Amino acid sequence: MVYSTPGLQGGRTSFTTQSEIHAWLRDQATALSRSAGVKAAMLPIGSSQQGQPLEALVLTRGTGTDPASLLATGRPTVLLIGQQHGDEPAGSEALLVIARELAQGLLQPLLERINVVIVPRLNPDGATRGEALAAGGQDIARDHLLLSTPETQALARLSRDYQPTVVVDAGEYRVSDSYQQKFGAVQKFDALLQYATTANLPEFLTKADEEWYRRPLLAALKGQGLSTDWHHSTSADTADRTVSMGGPEPVTSRNVEGLKNAVSMTIDSRGAGLGKLHLQRRVHTHVTAITSVLGSTAQRARELSQLRPYLDKEVAGLACKGQAAVEVANTPAQYDLQMLDPVTGADKAVTVDWESALALRILKSRVRPCGYWLSGSSKTAVERLRLHGVKVLEVLEPSAMLGDIYRESQRPRSAQQDAPGATANSRPAVRVEVSLVRGVIDAPVGSYYVPLNQPLANLAIAALEPDTQSSYFATQLLSDLAGVARVMSEPSLKSEELP
Image (cartoon, rainbow, N blue to C red):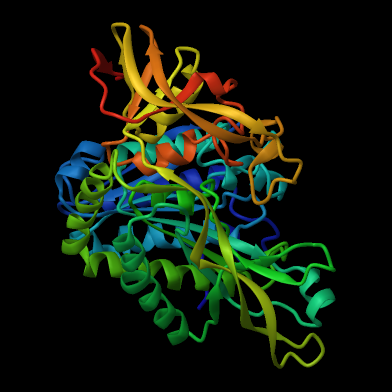
């Protein structure tokens, strides 16, 4: 297959520029608008840290391209995201191909059954420099809970408003010398895949991830002669021979969108750091994989239209009941990893110590509260929760609530693992251990209540339980343990939902 985007032209040394992406999306929207009953629009969603536009293309057979019109179709919406790391261009180029095929090619019939929203490039500043990180040095791919950057804030607003049923992050994995140093082999796979694997995900969501999406995707890639495995990586430490699947921390779009009850998957082609080497093959990998995801969504459109409401109701119904996992970890195992002999190119199987994300270990759990109280000084944390779509109530009259108050017991010195840390918000993460003290919480006027009888309850737990490395307390959006508490019985409040 030979694809034709501005960045894939013969003799071209650079990838598609931001202005070329703008023109390409505009052309697809114009082309699709000529088709009867189909709507398409370019949507400005924000600006990067250096002022470059962040744009999405919305494609639908609804009455309009606004969120309400897409929701009114009753069809599932697929959100496709490219190039969160600026040095991973294949996903962005592939999404331009997908946009054209939906607008005026073989994929257009899928719009009879699904809506599609495409963000080809979330990190234009990094792409301009050919570097992974955003202009301020943040790893925006790991900023989807904290939302410290304008790029992730723009995507969170888009997700909140359009409520996608399916979300795909199209990236690339880095071909690392570490594998040759540790195992005498090089990485092989055209694509590494993983769906959401984090704490408190509904069981039926994971079942849909696996059966409705991953298995057909494997067959599609195999049919094109493309190899694939679970997403995995290894550290640069040559003494550490462990290979780990993607972590359970709720910081990636894969895991955060899962906490919003969406089918969510990362698809990484083999290419970060390879420049233009094998670029057509890398793009073909993404086009094949994303076409499979779109086809699975169209095939399962009826079931998917029922899935999100079902999951939303299930999660909301768990408030005040049972246990919630606060901290989880991958599970140690052994795995036969297929790689390549660096001299002959032949397949080379290596048995490795493997950290599996398919069966997470619960390190810490607590009784699920009815909600969380936040002090009036928690405005930034409240703003970020609302960007996600979490329902937050403002207290209008002084109230008292029965709850558990956090007390710091110690500060471990262990290094943060797989956490956003300083790269996400320019401040080091604060890790604490806490004990819970049952008592009465005084809730003055202007403080906040976050009820857990809502669909995004599991996301609120990930953000507000303070003694995890990705929480809003650890990342210093909440500066004081006294400013957050667990509410353990349904409070009687005079309050109003923040608009």
